[in-house]
Amino acid sequence: MRAYLFQDEGDQRKPNDSGIPITEAQLNAAKVISSHSDGDLYAFADELMKQYGFKSRDEVSVSRIKLGERYDSMVKKFFEEHLHEDEEIRLIMDGRGYFDLRSVDDKWVRLLVEKGDLIILPAGIYHRFTTASDDYIHAMRLFRENPRWIALPRSHETDNVDARQDYKHLITS
Image (cartoon, rainbow, N blue to C red):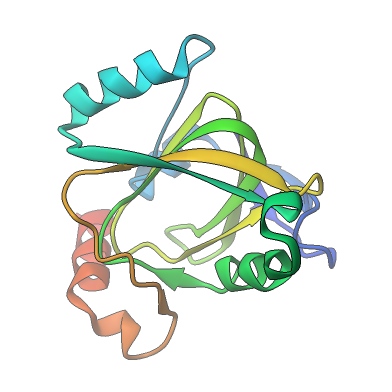
């Protein structure tokens, strides 16, 4: 998985690569877990379910073809900075996209995710998502429990929710 500081160049679906790479240690500091498999992704998912204690999973596709007129509004919504009170766990089954997340020092870090990539974002981390310029990604979502899946937009109020406070404590301890 390729990670680098985000440099806004207009189109959110472009790489927007500042040329400044982010190391695995920097991702670890933000408590982001990533992995990759070139093998059978369903077998990999089965292993992940056991390893991390995930209870269920489903699959979702985001594409201009599948969503039609709803595509642009959905991708725009995904790209608004937010957090969740649960982990966000994605195994990319096909296609490409970008997860942008806030680094420990509050800078945007862009992670390119492609087929075989696993990303686990901790609860309380500010982030956003977009497809790449080919407008297609197919991902498996893995869950520990029944997630609340409410996106909480960044605000002073959101900064004070338990998940955010727990995350801030986690990255400073």
